Image (cartoon, rainbow, N blue to C red; front, side):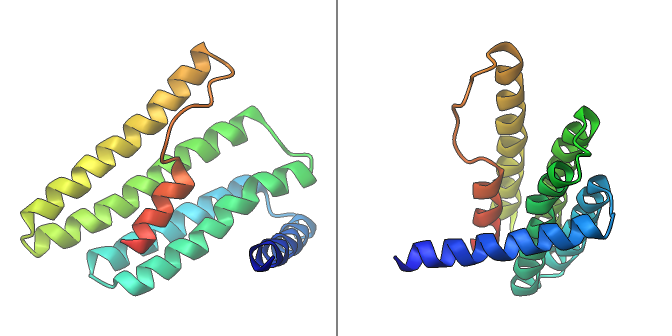
Length: 158
């Protein structure tokens, strides 16, 4: 019951944000680009070892990732390019965060963690590529694990 109440409250808040952004006439692709810029700020914070702050900035960037497509649907500005742009920017956002962690661990001379983050980065790219490739061949393909939201949550927790 509490989980449902929290979900309903979050959904209501998200709807209000989408409504406000829709009325502001900001283009959904601009929201996508702003999300990338915010993730780059988080990457710099990770690189400097400010993990707590970086985690909160990632949460803020995630808000843009959650609303850009919704704003596009509400404002009837959905385009194939917008979907493509969002997908590509999501990959760049992920890579920026991983690069921030790589810089931090390399500067701290923590070789094991450099390798670990590099492996996670490669896995992240391969999961995304594999999913996209499978969907291009098998339109109803809905298999896989650790999609982008789960990977972002793991970055924040980590």
